Length: 401
Image (cartoon, rainbow, N blue to C red; front, side, top):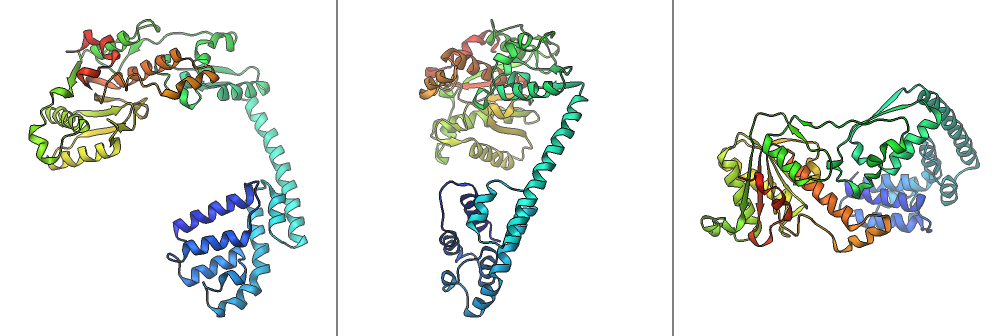
């Protein structure tokens, strides 16, 4: 079936089975047929008519008269067939509504009720079976514990009701807690010992990824927020600050390179061309650069340039959040300006309703920049504008070449 038409039918199914409003089945199907006239041939329309039981009067302008009689003869049969398929899927949500919307035989209705009861009994059996399995669990390892939330905490407590002797092993980095928008709450990290009795914690401070200056810049940014990291690498590392105000765009004006985002693009070309053997993460605070260029288009343009230059470069362009947990030889941070780092939305004051203060939001923005810096093994390139430089740059200026 044509994908667009299939999507329309799925929307209709959702309306009919799950919405509170009442819908006329035949009118809604007719809408789909009108939508599909240009994409479906006569035979496909006929097949849908059989499966969806559309009234004959609504089909008069869509199918030939030869098909009318066959549709009438098969309407009752396919009505029951539709319900049988629904039974086989074990989807019993709002089953009474479904039975009321579609006329079926009493035999089918009884079959549905019986199947529903059997299904619920099976669920109860499976649940008790799973409860026994939960009792046998000795330990649960929770990674990325800084992203823990109330939902996960409730799940752990539910498991402990069946298994009070359960032990937890949690690993996390509170300096990388950047997912509050998804429900994460550092409260569970900070209150670990109070939330889980008879527990203990230890700090893993050695950084095995990054060069000395990368580690030191991260420590400087996060000064006062916890135990600093120690570097293991023998590399010094290179952190370079570039102002796009100084970018020479004269060779590119004829190509239409006149926007601010073009200056960032030129700087990326220059950085990559000097050492194309390195891997690069090119990242931004948002999915759009300088309010005018989508990061995906930026990436495609850069890939096209590399191809024309016969450069086989391993690089990715995306938001900082997408690079969490990843690493590259070099990191290029785009638009490191005061209105991007930190980025506080005008409506963020409404977060106070959920207990998230302005300071908590600023702290998370700082952690986000820390994540950006520490994706790098050896090199960091920070691109900014002289009149709009981010305060975060000032906090690491002692380590910038």
